[in-house]
Image 1 (cartoon, helix red, strand yellow):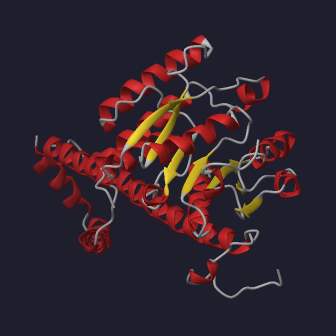
Image 2: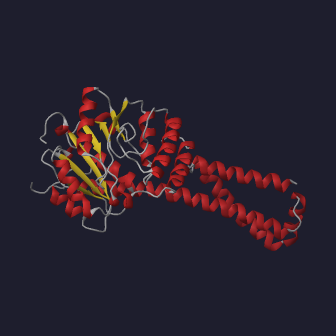
Image 3: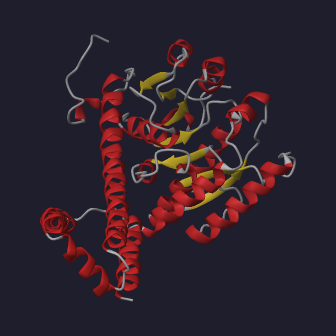
Length: 127
Length: 233
């Protein structure tokens, strides 16, 4: 039952990525490599449908279609995780940006020395 | 009350989201004891910002709603740009805190030379806390003690005093409602000196209606668990 090992392994990696919560450069390389493999594998699978069935048998899956379903599920999972992490990173940046705008637009107080702050420096109004 | 002691060297940060009804009263009361009140308007759809400004607060307007944790951090960072500010006080906008407690906590921070003073409703023997709230807060406190190692009696109190050095360390990744525990984690990791001070919470119908749902504790727990497993950045 090679497929069981593969699927559980993939799910374990998914859990690790979620908990680790970071997309590294290695991650990016892997995703690009996987993308190319998927395209190449897809073309081969279309040209030689029997091959999928044979791979399925080797890995312990009954039919090629089942194998495709498993692979699609795992691919979907990783896509969602990667999007989730990217959204979270974007949100952090967006909060930081909005915060900066808020501080620039803030009311001024007499003892205001925001001139020392980079960026928030010279949008001066007469006080 | 007049500005004696160290209250004039403190800035009060009040995160607000649609608090137009009550914010004016809260700001007025704060300005009776403090000179600097900073209201972070977290993208309110009502007239909170105008009301706070009219009452004499400095308003820092978030362009959109970013969450209470984000608002708190914005307010703290803004407060730190003001040179006269040695202490940052965090104060809830719904009027559940007592201004006299805030003043006493600033004095305590100065007198005991501690970096952080946290409000605790459970140190106050006369405080009545609704039973459900009490049970939930007890659980949250146990959880916080275990995860941060801080010997606290109240984990989710919005009234805090942070000395400038401690306030500078506050960087939050959880922008929503999990920030109360996250702040404690930050303070514990930073090794700051922390004391608790007994405070009174006024449970009004308004503050109850604005308060969090009990089940949100599960959301918070999940966020904190995942956040803890991730490496600090």
